[in-house]
Amino acid sequence: MAQYYSFRKMQTQLATNFVPHYTTLVSKVGGIISPENLCRIQAALKETNLKDVANIIEESLMAAENAPLDVAVIGESGTGKSSFINALRGVSYEEEGFAGVGVVETTMKKTPYQHPKYPNVTFWDLPGTGTPNFHPHEYLEMVEFATYDFFIIISSSRFTLNDALLAQNIKEIGKKFYFVRTKVDNDLYNEEKSKPTSFKQERVLQQIRDNCLANLSHIGVPEPCIFLVSNFDLDDFDFPILEETLLKELPVHKRYTFVLLLPNLSDAAIEMKRAFLKEKIWLDALEIISGKLLEHLPEAMNCIECYCSVNGGLPSALFQFLKVYILHLKFINTVADDAKILLHKTLEILSLRKCQRDGSDCLTE
Ligand SMILES: Nc1nc2c(ncn2[C@@H]2O[C@H](COP(=O)(O)OP(=O)(O)OP(=O)(O)O)[C@@H](O)[C@H]2O)c(=O)[nH]1
Ligand SMILES: [Mg+2]
Image (cartoon, rainbow, N blue to C red):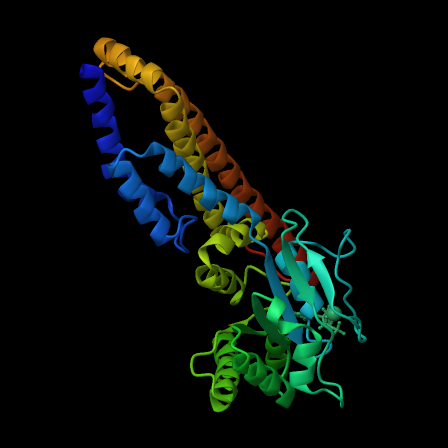
């Protein structure tokens, strides 16, 4: 009887603490478990239905790990579509699998690029629009628009008629799109050269943003998602916010896939990965605990009583799992901290080299 009560007490604690603890683990863009599944787990814990707990967690983890994600990158020729795909995949120039980039028209047919580490994620490099025969509706049919999870429209200069037609048509077919304005590094450079005394970076960026916003509102997109980026400086401008926004808006099972594929090029990306991996380790541990308790209920109950009568603490089987869980967490934290240190060192070296090249004075901290 005493065994039964200890066991019940532990389960009640698990049921009460599950959601509060889970919320502390989840990253700011959301977690792996959908709100519906979270309620199902809590209900199953309350009913002491450990089989269901293990099943729901397993289902969610499988869906998250195997969810395919197809992202279409679209826009006029030469705007930087292939460069953007390389940046998102963390693939540098002339590495294996690098999407061809060039000063002349390069991408002639739709080409899939798998993420080097996550093969279920595919970026589709679509041929440049903007030729005289371009008809957006036929074009979208031709590239099989229905197969993509969302579109990224790339534009690198003034908002064009083609950009407008594309946005309008993607909106009409009921798909989500993000508008990415590349090469802002060029705009800033040109403005600074031509107006050295009155140049203000923020003002130039605001002008570009306002122009895109006005044009997209004009064609009936009320709250467009616009991001200004440079494919050469991913830690700058809107690239980190773009990654975060894409993640927040993805269906829950696709979010996990996307966060892991982000290159470690910003502190924000490293932090998001840390949070997701911590969450996953905890869910793995909980799934194992639920499964093991179920399989070895009599042993577990014995174990609880023996351990608690001697130590007044946790049963040893459970303790073993927690130990593994904590060791994994320590490992993730160390790796994430190291990645950040490495990132900052690399950025320092790059900026020092740039200063040396430019012949300017560099202030080192
Ligand atoms: N300064 C600057 N140059 C960029 C940027 N992105 C791309 N480029 C350059 O722009 C040129 C065209 O880039 P691509 O990535 O080949 O463009 P694309 O849209 O794939 O071109 P197509 O395949 O012909 O449609 C290349 O010389 C790139 O190095 C950027 O953000 N800033
Ligand atoms: Mg290309």
